[in-house]
Image (cartoon, one colour):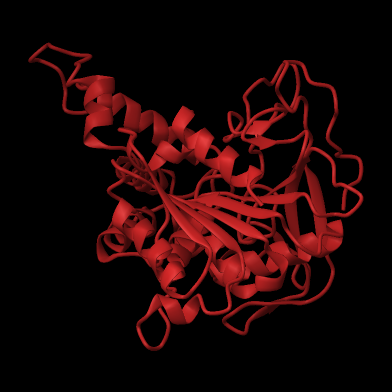
Length: 382
C-alpha cells in the first residue's frame, strides 16, 4: 500500500469530496484465478471518500463498468478539475453520503489503470505479462476486491453498488460473500450476456485482432492496434446510447455540405462524436485489457445447472435493489427485472425500480433526480 496517496479532506467546492489521491494495495499472496492459473501477487488501485466508523459498519464498495476505473468522485487537483465518473452521486449530502459512509472505489483486477493486468510487469520474468496474464472472470475481480476489504479492515460491507459490468460484480459479491454484504444496488445489468451483446463484443475484438499493430499482443506502448481499439470503442459506445438520445444531440447535423468532399472527411456530427470517443479511449486504455474485460462480460452467467436463477441466489442474504432504465437496449429493463424477480422467488428481500431516461445504457452514469432518490432512500432504509 502506498500510504503517501491519501485523500485530502479539504473540499474546494461545497458538497464535494474535494481533492483526492489514489492508493495502491499490494497483495503479496499468490492469487488463484477461477481458471486455476495463478500469479504470485497483485495490486489494486483504489480511492476512498469519507471515514470508516468505529464499528467498521459503514463501508460502501463502488464497482466500475468496463471502461471505468477507481476515480469515481472528487478531483485530483485545483488544476485538474475533471471529476470522477460518479461525482454527482458520491459526496457530502449526496445520495451516497460521505458524511455517513466510508466509500471505497476500486479498479478491477486485469485493468490498465493501476491495478495488476496484462500491461503489468510479471515479477517472474521482469517483462509485461501481456497475453500470459490469466483471463479474469467477474468472480476473480470480486475475489481480489475481497482481499482489499480484508486489508482495509472491513469484514462486512454496508452496500456494494455498481452498474453494467459493475452490476455484475455487485451480484457476484452477494452470491460469493453472503456473510460480508448487507445490501446491494445493481444498475443497468444482466444475469448473463445475451447473444446480441456477445456479438457486438466479438466484432470489437475482431477489429483489434485484425489491426496490423496487434502483433500478437507484443506491441510497444503507444504503438499498438490503435485503429482497431478505436473502432471497437466507437461501436461499443453506440450500444451505450439510445436512438432518441443521439437524435436529440445531433439530429443529423452536418459539418460538411460540399458535394466535393472526400470520403475520409467527416460529414455528420455524430461521426465526429464517435471518432472523438475512439481517440480519447485509445489514449487511456489497453487493447488486451479491453479484450479480456469483454470476454469476462461474455462469459458471465448466473444461471445454475438447473437453468434457474433462484438456485444461484439461494445463499444470498443481502437486501437488494435492482434498477433498470427504459431506453437501455444493451441490458434492457427485462434483464434487470429478471434478477429482481428471481431474488424474490428465492425468498430474498429484493425490490426493482425502473427509471425513465432517454439516454440508453449509460443513463446510470448521468445526473437524475429520480435515480438519486431511489439510491438515497434505499441507503437510508435498514
